[in-house]
Image (cartoon, rainbow, N blue to C red; front, side, top):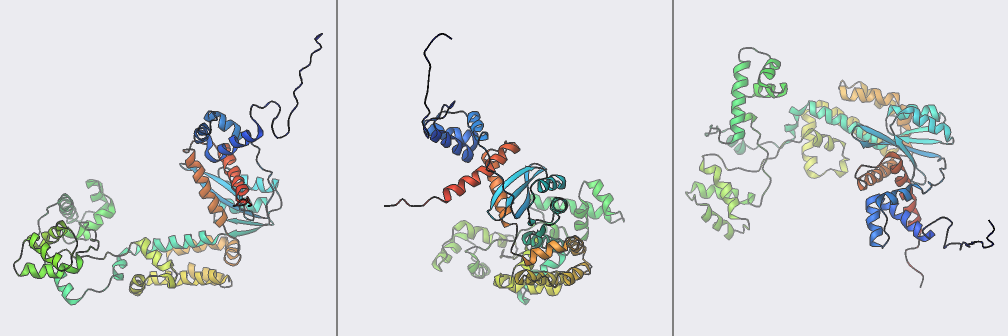
Length: 460
């Protein structure tokens, strides 16, 4: 107390800060690297720059960075994302500036309603068809216009069309071109080789004989399925089959460079030339550039008395059929335009679904929702359970659906930010808590915006 000496340290603005071990520029570098690469990745990058900090220190510096002040947006985007397993989170986005506002764990209506009451001023809310978000927006911002996103509406309609195609899976082979007389005669020719050679054929033959033996005495499919340890649908498939060859999975062969020469191979085989090596040499003279092994595999069925294995087109899957129906007619390939009319002529249910999809597409393209009520009534009266269920859900949310059809607002910004959230989760190997994930998602968006506003070239 009696010592007259006093220690004084003057702070230099922009160079030093009281009680800090790093200069402001170095501290800003540490924080930016932490925002972009998180803990372990940030520590490694800083080590390259000759700055030695542990991953815990990098995360600590990152969490000390204050979040930018939250300004209530006039157009709010709400969407959910998967945190881990069956746990979901909610992300709020400013649809005008395209910047994330905040995120939290869960997707309940109470949390969203409380946030909207704490931040009044939202005029438009873009969301999907979630009932929880609909109730939360109604409770927290009753004056806001709710917009049901067009992408989610179209996605829901596409899924219902796929469900209809799954129910009418037996109609899908009708999309294939008609078989010619020669091909039909060859297809109806009985197969001489009835022995099971491969493991799959042996398995199919054994199951076929077991199922046929049990169902021959009038037993139900459920009891047979329980006894054999099979699915009931599998038992039904084996019961409907007349031979075990019908249930053997034989995937269609892909088109190969040898296909143009199959007729020549059949001709030479019928003439008595059975050497694959000689046949390969003859094909090379005709321009075939493929390997000898492919020719050897092509003539293998002929050695067993079977017809040559030609490429076969498989019927469309329910997902493919739904994609054909929901694709705009001008964007369909000639392949689809040739097969879709056959399918629709054969299946009235898919024809009905196709007509309703096209009517909804016209409303979305023209941004005209005047026919929405009539369309919903027709959707409910089709007699198809998937479409009737969709009609009930859309009727309850018809005002938001009409806004989604007519307005320019959508959830595209939300989906882009959800992709960014997934990226940040993968960078941190899924180990980040909600607070750290929120910090990084919000800060990295502002960091990108800050560097995007910088000039791309230095003045000369």
